[in-house]
View 1 (spheres, rainbow, N blue to C red):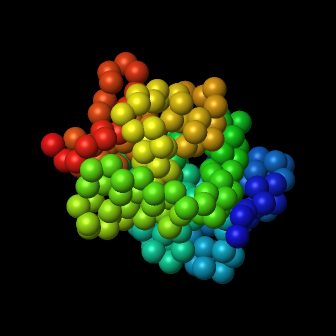
View 2: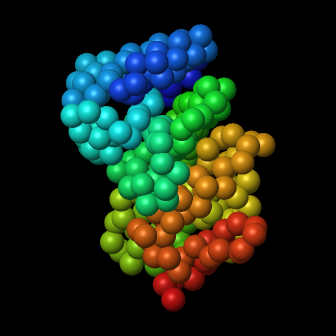
Length: 233
């Protein structure tokens, strides 16, 4: 069912008490219901007991790390995840995206930006529910994208994409061959117009290419990306 963004329940997982409480207070002040966890096992337990609409998840946690938390909760029930990382490292970010994270923030971050990204992720859930009622299929060579069922096939083999990867691919597939700027993709897929999300878009494109084939998404340097209209090269 669509999420009511104004009253959504958010699980905040952060082992540093000051940061955990600061994030919690800011989100509660923005109208969200918030539950807290401070380590990996506690995060999974809280997720099971409280069924949050979104998870704000630190990477470095006691017990087991945020990547393992993300892997476990996404296997149980897909949910938007905003990852917090202390390292601005592409490899570390790609690991998070690979286990199902939708977006990330590098510490230190501004609370205003965190709240904005939380709101954008929740709005994406609402938009995905609306799109699921429409029957839209794109056949591009041996790539097939079904927006109604949110399923993707490459050469008759189904490919599993995270929710963000699917939304990114669907956005590109809606205008095959057309170059979309990073800013346009960030506004359309992440729902945050006017913001700079270059690293976020680039990281998700890289993760998407690893699953559907690098040659299918063309880079126009300094501009953005386009989905090739033919089959694999």
